[in-house]
Image (cartoon, rainbow, N blue to C red; front, side):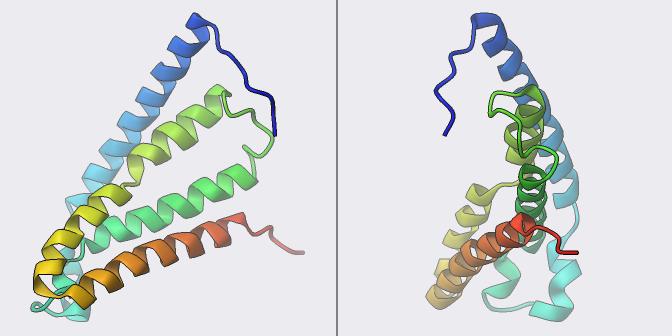
Length: 144
């Protein structure tokens, strides 16, 4: 593990600025993606009654794509970058931090819980396990 690095006030200000920029871009892309009506997109698969239509499917997909891509970047082009490297900060901490939102996904569990406790548990477990699976897939090295 690398030793603790202390940033100068200028470096810290720049780091905060690039994280904010990346976060704004990631959040904007997530917001645009969430404009898709998940009920309409997934109604033929999940139906229109019960707990499944209450799952924010588009957000779940955004989270999986974000986890996979961030892990792929950390195993690939950003593998040897210092955690305080501006590229790593803008891409991983900023962009993918803003793009993904597991907290919003888990807020939806409240709505699901009131319809089906089992559905809420299944949704929570599914989110955690599929996120771990996406990270595992992103971390795998391509074998030749």
